[in-house]
Length: 299
Ligand SMILES: Nc1ncnc2c1ncn2[C@@H]1O[C@H](COP(=O)(O)OP(=O)(O)OP(=O)(O)O)[C@@H](O)[C@H]1O
Image 1 (tube, protein in one colour):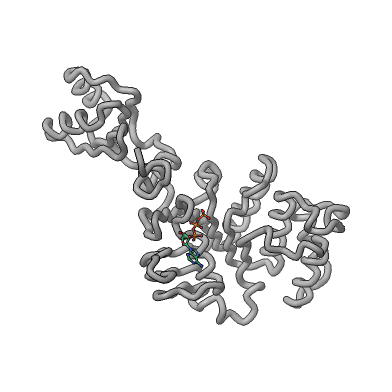
Image 2 (image 1 turned 90 degrees about the vertical axis):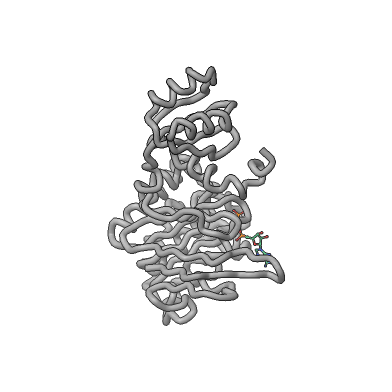
């Protein structure tokens, strides 16, 4: 169980993480999403004791990470797959940790096998690893102590399609066996497929959190038109709840047929008209974080 309670982090006058609260529960994969610079890595660094919060608490199993007696046996962490000793071989990196944590030496081969690094790859120095191989080694390192909590920052980064599927199955298997899995990713499709719960962060604030099913099952109709403001006005005048969520998107509680008729009556051409529940994670993400998107900010 991971509990982040009212965590704020300021650097000088800049607030990187602002009153962030969420939990990640056992048996579930929690996806942590946000645009570049939203505060994901800072939150995960606070959670793993690398950065102190300015205020608030971040707990794993009810305690700060730094208070866990042998964290590697309880929490698997992958924050930066490139942050490994470049001059050591993959096997040596796992071996050092296996000895430090006090695990049987057979665990190293088990892990190499689990993450699909061959014996010859394991003998190569990490400086000669591809990004995907580093990522696999980083995942092996996180899983070494068979922890009940996994905290992974962009674990799919650099993996090929087969690798991404492998990782998805691996994390799903962990969660199904009762582990708490918290992962951040820019790969929204991956998160949409694997996550049970979502936390969306923008500009340091949590802008949405809940089960994926609840967050994606928004009732109503999604409309795209070059005349979003005019359509919103017409729907509102007809007593229908409608909001323009971005310059060319309108969300409304009316059904698609009613919206189509009102738009046709007003001579407004529609680009898209469909039930909102089919809207995917990408759309929800872009709408929720529209104010904080670099590209979207000027639109
Ligand atoms: N040590 C620091 N000093 C000053 N500002 C910092 C520091 N660390 C992070 N920040 C700022 O805090 C904000 C959040 O950064 P963070 O790395 O947490 O974002 P992120 O959501 O992980 O982004 P990305 O998806 O690009 O990795 C950014 O504006 C960043 O520049």
